[in-house]
Amino acid sequence: MCRNIKTLFNFEPAVTDDEIEAAALQYVRKISGFVQPSKANEEAFHRAVLEITEVSRRLMDSLVTNSEPRNREVEIERARERNAKRFGVKATEE
Image (cartoon, rainbow, N blue to C red; front, side):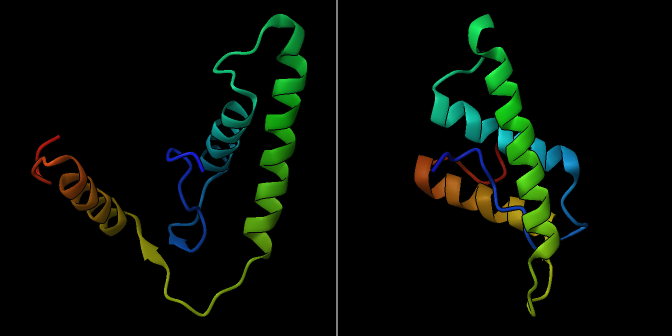
């Protein structure tokens, strides 16, 4: 799975349409191998992003959980700590 695609469910505040579209774009880029499609593939590429965005929004709207919503800042800090361990850089350095 593409590392740039992040978990979007069960956050407070809730996921935005822009975040869902960004994840859809990353997904289409990953599976197509295109960062920017050629003119010949542009329509199919953008249609795929739109359709995946729509499906993802429906998914987010239909999921339920009993878990407490996650805090974005806490998750960002945890990711920094994981990266620090992985790459040997202090978590406070950016």
